Amino acid sequence: MKLKNSIIFMASAALAAGCVNPVEPYDAIFMTDAQSTPDKTITIDTPPDGTSFTVQSSVKAKEDITIELEIRPDMLESFNKKYGKNYQMAPEGSFEMSSWSTSIHAGHNMSDAVDVTVTTMENFSEGVTYCIPVSIKSVSAMQVLEPSRTLFIVLKTPVISKAIYLGSNKYTVPSFQEDANLAALAQVTLESRVYVDRFQSSDPYISSIMGIEGVCGVRFGDVKIPNNCVQICHDSYQPAATDRLCETGKWYHIAAVWTGSTWDIYIDGQYVTGAQTAGETIDLTSNNSGGFQIGASYGGGRYLYGYVAEVRVWTRALSQSEIANNMNYVDPSSDGLLAYWRMNRWEANGSGNRVPDETGHGYDAIGASSNPTMMDTKWL
Image (cartoon, rainbow, N blue to C red; front, side):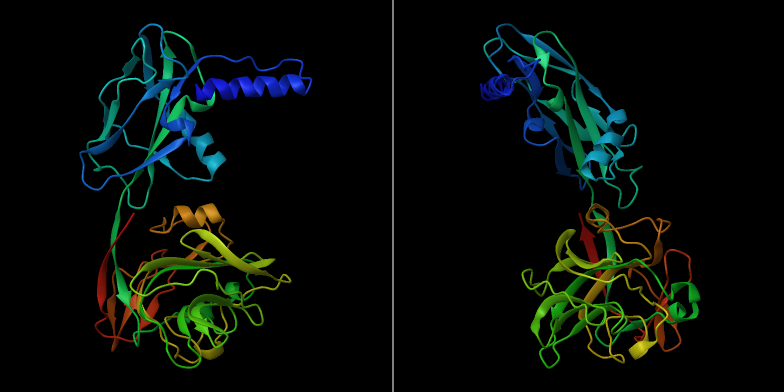
């Protein structure tokens, strides 16, 4: 009766406001899960695997009610736009429905359950989040509550990769200094997955993640903040995530976004803090204190003792939804993606190693170790 009572409340409110066409209360049928949120997320690791759902009525059925179901891929684009997602329709043949209809029996208000089973991930692409929009096609009695007609079943699948240990195996990107087009960027995003074994315990307590000293640095710690606090730096702009301290032995996704008017920190896809800026640009060609480095700064010191993966540099300011939706992987051909080091493979490079730039732009990262340590990773 909760739904019906809420509809009656809306009708009363409309009358009180003097509406010409007030909402009339009515009995309705809806997707049970969609009453609280339009999507239902499940994790698919090894098929066959899936979930089930039910259809519900706002009152007990006076007679058996048949509900016909359908898949609505045409609704996915508007859903993505509304909620800031980039879900794709699950590939044809990758899932099965146990039935295309269900029933609410007389005297009840809940239908028989319908199973949705992912049978194969053969045509799934790495890093893509898929969705199955299941909708009520028709009912034999009552009306359908339109906002809850469709349930978007979101399929989370793992990204299996590797990460590289830093420490003295710091990386430089000398080719940035050779590209004059990178000297005055209006917008920049730096992002990486980070796993710290130990934070620096001596002055200045800095563990460098990536960037250029004084230009666009991302790091843990400083003399004025805890050594496990994320801080981003550009000259005097140095916002720090003091309310979101990090721990050892745990993976984090950390992003720094220079929008041209703000300098912002995101941790695990969520905005944490930032600072207003005056419209300055970022110079990635700077050779200040060794130029662009991963795992070091200030002349090659201030090591990060831990692993990194999915290290990226963009020439545009990513939105919060873009960051949150692509923490585990991104298409190397993505718009504005300048350099992408997955850190899941390396090649010998003299007495050190080279991690290739996945974009094909040639901004390879040059590491110090001839045999860097790797870690297997699995993210959802």
